[in-house]
Length: 439
Image (cartoon, rainbow, N blue to C red; front, top):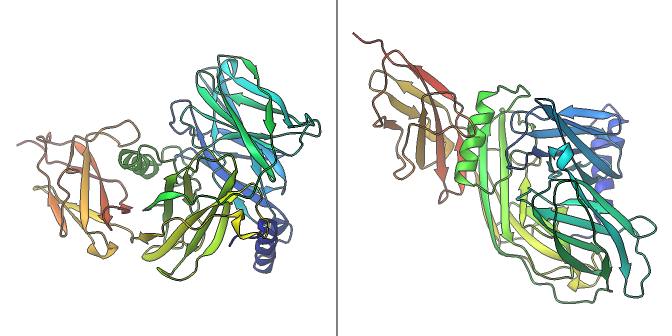
């Protein structure tokens, strides 16, 4: 059972201090996430900052902020294009020595930004401080959030207008209160919320947990990184709801590994968040790895250090009640169904001419292969001229059978390897070839 996340954070800090020569860095934290526009597309080159720490989003819209002071920190994002300034922000709760993932920010034109403010009180009308207020809407990757001050007041700024938002307030020991609002350009919506004391219900476990694994070539910080753009387009093609890569962290062999978990959100006012469990056993106990303080979505991406190619992990998720981490056993639910996350190996691909046949290494663990061929640089919004999604190839190759290729022209390709009922996925880098000149 997950039992003291502050304690786990301190333990992580001690471990980091033991393996780092920079003692100052072990007393800080890190934050990662993704910056997107109102259309959900990643924003490349956005400036992301907290305090005096600044970074810029990479080719998948992701950022990684290091040396962040452990505390409740507001993360800001901004971007200027054609003279129009875009802004957004989100709150991150960080612990010493830990990386806080999934702090995602939606930016919108500055002149259109809206906000929600109000006061959170208990049933007797007393203001409640330290309560988290979430605002979720517009297809965002996660909620925007704020904490109430000593007077119970909160304010969630820099929200993209034109969407319905579900607003929810909750805190340890209190049942949640929620409402819905629509935000127009530049509007300030006042919304007061009232919490009652939580009980000790038997929390329902999350249902229908699924796991999808991705292995892809390492992204770089260059905005023209062709691999990053193309790989992200493939991932969105197969999972339109997915959020983009949370981090540019690579592994010793250069690949990026993600495990994407999804489940049906638990509908109860007693919910405080979710406990994420991971282990190597199909039947034994799993260890707690994160406390997801997000109640309105059932989505989590694991990019932690233990994940490696050619390995298998198992996951469960538990619902955490508003009384968590009370020692009573009913402060968290029974586990969800346990899912297997089988991580494939890297996929290398070559092409032979003039037949145009693609071949790949079979050691990745994939059993099916989908080939995408493009007549221009692939990326988000670029459609292939040919693909075999409806009839994936098996074996070690696939011969091109799409529209006729023009002579003396450059084409691009990328291959997706699939295994484990297509829940395990590995993506090659982008390749290119030039057809022969006409006789």
